[in-house]
Image (cartoon, rainbow, N blue to C red; front, top):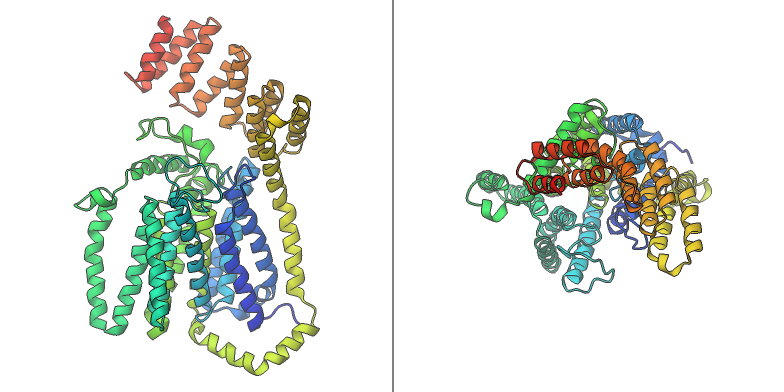
Length: 615
């Protein structure tokens, strides 16, 4: 069997399943025995599935010129250019560990994006109109699992037992906003399946599922998913009415346009619907976006560094924020996040890719007829809804993976022969299915072997991060059960094995500090600063350590650096004033108090600073 060739029907179905299971398990993956129980296991699962999918689809990769159409090849080239821009920005990032694996509790690094891009490429090569129904059902089934979990959380029967103060509907995604975003977009798939269903009982079942999905979405108290659903559902409804009678479709299109204007204005807190739809968190996002734009202006070509938003936010944040002293490690807009962290080298390829997929998806929708038109409308609606929600969303891996898979499926449906391809392949496989099975039995299974190799390489690459996160979790939660000597020995062992893992070093440093291991904490802080000289915690933790040991002079050195990294943080400045006064340097204490007065005159911090000087 030649390695460079088109996949037969059996192989294509296998690859399709692995792509979709990659989406399902990335969304559902959690492991409570990790320091990061949400995103780290999702990255782990995502990378492993991407490795397997790459291996199994290697024949079609090597034969891509013969197995893809013109528009499909353009899309694949654009994905490649995006990956190239990502690698260039990664190489330009100052902290390579973060660039590759992503920020702690985010994991939106190059490794995750490359894995999702691979799923998009493979989906574009192995799906067709018929198998797109499989994609819809997997997506819908995942949403129903999260919906069921949402009901359990709402009833206080969460088997995981997350401790959540503000809203219990975090499902497996870690945040009600992510739950809303996922359920809203996935609801479009459920709605399409309900519309397409021929059997009335099946149709009713899908509509009941849709109601349950939207109920949990509503309970999340986040409306981003609702807007995504309305966009996709509107497209499906317009096309369905258009197919019934063109006049109905035209009327629906005009009505949607008229109703869409006040809804869009309400999001901006304008108009009569604002009281119902506007969420104050948008104002916070405006602060984040302004900071992101400031970062972009600082490093316009390659950005500040992949997933490095958090370490640059404090310095680039606006002075007067909606929530004073707020910090974040993400721009809360995928577009602004990539612009700030990857610069134009990453942002332009990303935007061009999205625009092109949207263009060829719309073109395919316009050209299609009958049931095919309805199917494409649903997948295009999912894509457009996701593109819109991404304006105000964080790239949570459990949600984002479906965005990239959807893009791949939509690319697959834009082939000129995509609609007829499925039936043609089926006829060929009926005639030659036995021969294919026999050949597969005799021939060496190169795709399986390559999948096994890529899987092993992926395990070698990502397993250490999982292992270190698990070990630090166990140490943190069992410190009281260990003798002092055993604790120090284990802590030193973990520190020795985490010399290049800056995120785990910060976690271990916090553990050491809480247990009074000051010298070890200071050594770790030094290593953190070697890896990342502008690390906030690389300055903050030694300041705390020296203050705990009554050494305000040395603590002040790090507090002064924090003033540079976090220029609006008056809590740090107040502590710095105390340190200056403790060592008798009233001039510097007065200068710091004057800085507080300059940036926040009349504030409580200004009053407290003045009181410290008087005292």
